[in-house]
Length: 197
Image (cartoon, helix red, strand yellow):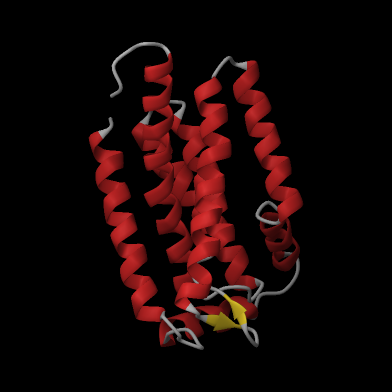
């Protein structure tokens, strides 16, 4: 089960870097971005309220709330590795997206840095961590894609990101979380005196 996440991580990381170079300094989205955003912005209530709730989970207070729930659930189940991965994996995904934004310089809504989407990276990382603990690859794939798609939809509907920004956030989490999971496992194996995998 380690080979496939490693391949996905490398592919996602490569895609993220390529997109970052393509969109560097780009003040607007692509024509595809514009078409999708125009359609989504035509949606009205209750869709906007639903999008705001989804968006809240990527805001600082919402992020801490969701993270705290995940950590508490993992610790109550005696799964310290997943609790650590929830904190370290999501924090690393946020750090990467935050660090990339000024490097890429792509803007939306009058100067707000937009690529890659930190909200989408957060949703993706939470879904990855929550399902990796289950050990079922198909479940991880389905839940992760659904969580990322829901956040991407919310970000586009709220006019906070271009569709390609959300793809970048998705790729950032797919690249970072498996690498952090490997590091957590390696540290746990060293600590217990076992052989790092």
